[in-house]
Image (tube, rainbow, N blue to C red; front, side, top):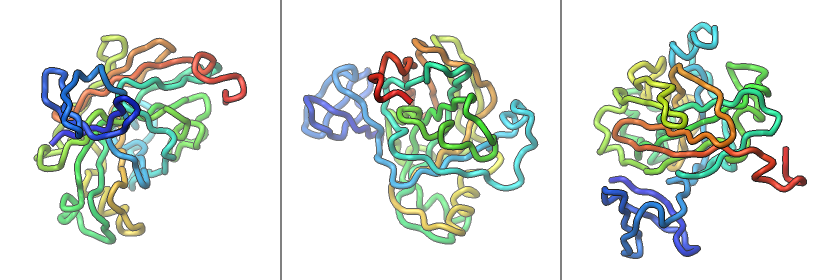
Length: 257
């Protein structure tokens, strides 16, 4: 099943994919995808993001591949939906996308094995976890101004249930900027697989329904200027569209940071 969260006529509700750009709302109405405002398909409880989880990306940044997962947390205010706008700080010199497979936990788990891990996955969605390099102090665990900024993690459009994705460790990923493909990869090239990540995380923290794991990005990063349309796509999961805007065109003077 492919399910989204949208706002229509001021009401937030679920929507279901009918194909041909049509969706069916929970209230029974059928409409075109452009007739609604898209929200993140889930409201994450806790979000764990992975750094340098693809060897080619680590090499791209002149780092050795890590020997254990490099994890950090993200705030809920960083998430926006499909066809949303992401704010680029006016002073930023380099801001890049990161196409990532996002894993949604379906039930509480603690200290489980890799063999058990998929039993606790509800489904998958697409994340675009932007980073503002200007504020970077540590590639291994990025500081909050790099990865925790408002609007800087588009998510969606769909939550695709786990039964629809028989092999999440063999999915093509790609990113295009203004129609030009700039990033390509495959989830099979993760250093730490989805089962390995769930087993490792659950060894020291309780994972619960609605928790989100962003599994990292492959090589192929590029700067995204204001006005750019960025499309991050994962095979069988979805196509997430996002536009970059300057902070001065988005926030009032008092709100800019």
